[in-house]
Image (cartoon, rainbow, N blue to C red; front, top):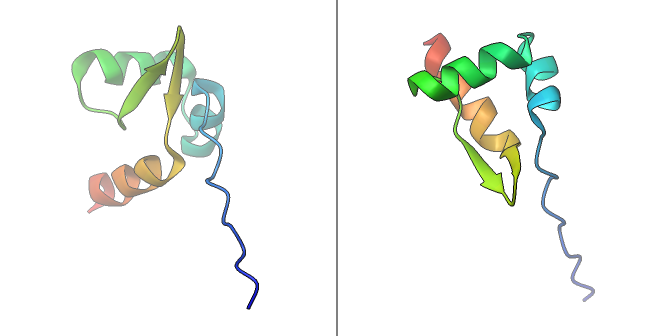
Length: 63
């Protein structure tokens, strides 16, 4: 049997996340400052979002 390796989904930039959520990047930064937006983390100097975490946050915040 051949095992297929599943590649992880690429992390999203703030621009990617803003497009997905339909909000400006400045809103994402404000939410991050206030601690109310989707979880983001630093990869070196860069801010990145886990797409699965963004989707989960969206579903939870809409409930």
